[in-house]
Length: 125
Length: 277
Image (cartoon, rainbow over all chains, first blue to last red):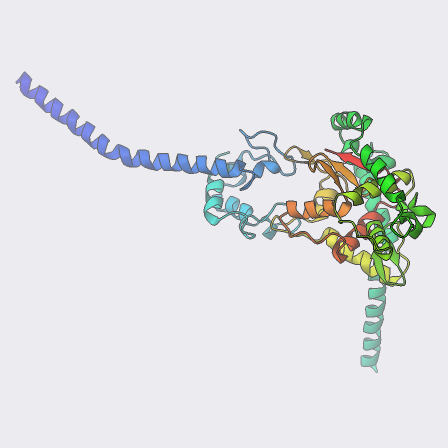
């Protein structure tokens, strides 16, 4: 009897284990991908030949920032809608013709893919 | 009849409207300079010619130590020698200029009313060489910066006095003004974006200078260049930085720009040649 109980328990825990094993890779992979996108975005943001965002904006983790634009923080509060942040990076002149911010998408300074990644990163700030 | 009156009124408005819209360089100049005086109340007028070193105490200290043994000193000496060295025909550069070319840099660029074009000092030096059977200098660096360093040095303390004598000259002024305020390049910056809107701010670690006073100290020794350059060399560098195709040195575009740019610093004392890091 006791043996039987043990067997059931073992089987049950094995089932739980198995199911969690099955679920983990997907969740983990998605999380990993999001993380790596943010990491990629960060690199593009800081790269002088790509976003070079530090030229004008202070960003946590970046050295010697310029002070032409506002520091990039509380971005989720400032841009609840991530698409608005992306639109700003893509072409700030649309909302403000007098801006000095380069129109990164419109002038093909960055590819659309790079702008997606940079948006992902900046939205975490 | 009513129609005729309406037409007359419309014409009147049109004519006077354009008359009022005509560029007024004197007004521009006043507004331009006052803007900087207002925004940098602690910078004396004559200090604007010292560029970013007028805006930052720590940079000023570093710069002062550079100026103790100026990197352009040899250029002045070489320039003097070259200026006075006779051409094959026995004449010298000085023979082409008023006062032998000394102490006259404050009047450049000027509008040549006969040729109806803006003339720069560099341009007239090369015209002088050609007229005397000598090979012209290259425009942006090398011997031209040596003689310009000597001529600038001889004009130190003279106040910039660029003149716009007539409507033809006004067209060149307007062309330069348009260049100065127009956004350009992949990065979409105008001269004015950085040097009117943002002087005193930093692009990464680089402090942006005021447009007022930028022209006072050319030619310059620039550490980044490891040598000297003319103002048109610098214009080319600025254009490249905003990822625009630079114009040729002494092109109409840059001469027009220099005309407007220098006019905006009228009244400031020359202090060239300069050193910049």
